[in-house]
Amino acid sequence: MTGFIGALTGISSAQLGISEIGVSYPDASWGPPEGKIPIPGTPFIVVLRDILKYDYTIDDAITRFANTKRDCSM
Image 1 (cartoon, rainbow, N blue to C red):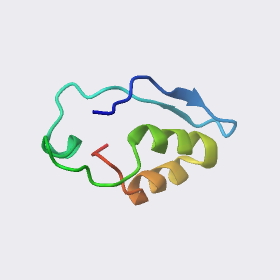
Image 2: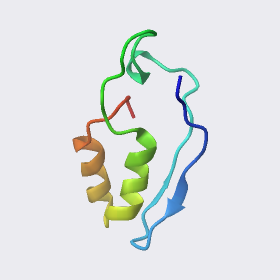
Image 3: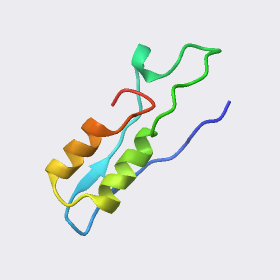
Image 4: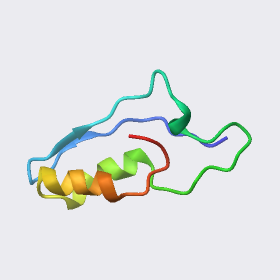
């Protein structure tokens, strides 16, 4: 099984800041049932990176969250 270990936190030149925390109590939206192929989507960590890299306002960031097909609930 492939996984990710790491963290992303930062502030952009547009003064947008982000950070992430892990899931302590994942629910059904966290991922597919064991043995099932995951639904294609953008990983949470990549959405956060894109906010720092591409967005200029909090409205831009909220729109990105709302419109990105994600691989799990955020």
